[in-house]
Length: 165
Image (tube, rainbow, N blue to C red; front, side, top):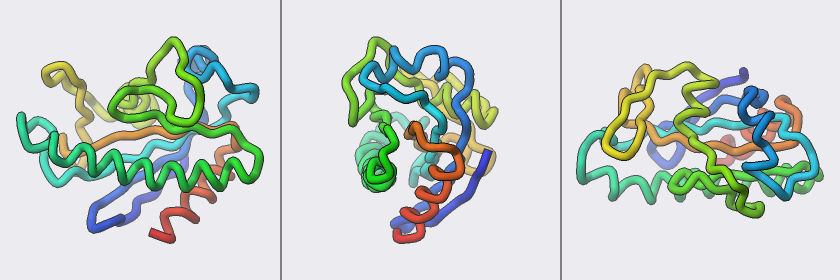
């Protein structure tokens, strides 16, 4: 795992780059049926929410902003990786569906990805599961990008994009 953190738009972002764990290897085609190359790396982006996501009303105001920030970062990373002829996709945190590829028969559960890769505990909160971050507690918004690029290429690309923000 390669990890880092970055302040972005007056908020905090932590990221880590990983090789896919077994579930993703086994179910890549069900998540991304259009892919012709194996998934070689994944990027987890955690954003510090201005409010705790256990608050019953306020998070709905912030979630679209956090999603938009992820899309801005993720699409910029995807663009650079595609220029290098890698396959790449980001999963919509709201739906678990890929944004750049055809819809598969499975949805990606970003909370499970974070728990599997980083070992952070989770809680059930209504219809959702939330991550318990070591510093941010339940004020964390997770998102995931996957790529056929090697881990070091995804790491360098992520650092390049985040250094511009």
